[in-house]
Amino acid sequence: MRDLRFAVRQILKAPALSAVVVSTLALGIGANTAVFSLVNDVLLRSLPVENPGDLVLFRNIDGLRGRSSRAGENNGSIDPITGRNASTSFSLLAFERFRDHHPALSDVFAYAPFNQVNLQIDGQPESVTLGQLVSGDYYGALGVPAILGRTLTSADDHSSATPVAVISYRYWENRFGSDPTVPSYCVTVQQRF
Image 1 (cartoon, rainbow, N blue to C red):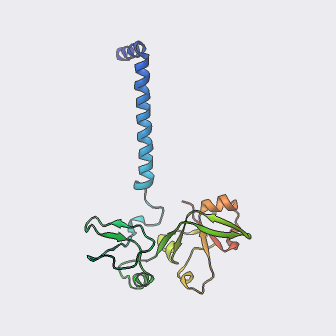
Image 2 (cartoon, rainbow, N blue to C red; image 1 turned 30 degrees about the horizontal axis):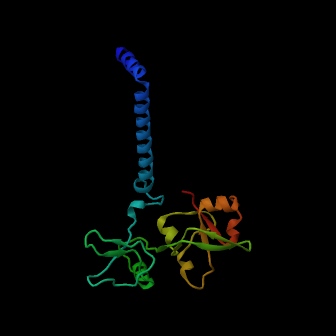
């Protein structure tokens, strides 16, 4: 109790210094909280899929004399071991070989970012800023079911298949007002994460 009274007397003797100290502590705590929240959301939290620890991302590392395949949509990076360019882009033939001959893997799927998706909904053109092109087994392999409609299957990979799209829960809520008849537009609502 005596220490508390002493602390209060010291604070009252120098209120400006006390205000600076309290403000500095508050800013430091707030900044640390913000940084940890960002790191937690981006780096520490696992993917919202059935078995995130079982996922494997294949990378193609350039040969000694340069690129062994054509460049494409990828997240080009440098391999930390060899120091050579690396990519997650593969040709359709390479993907089909991975998919058809994968005794050590339970499923193989492909995906690529699609930065602007142009849609026509009820005869009106719209643009969505971010999407993904995915192979048919994408949702099944990740264990992500649809809330309404169905997800893609390997049958959707054939050029003769009817075009279909899967939309996110957020887009379904914001654009369609959670209308349960949306799958009749030939789209599916993905599970909410």
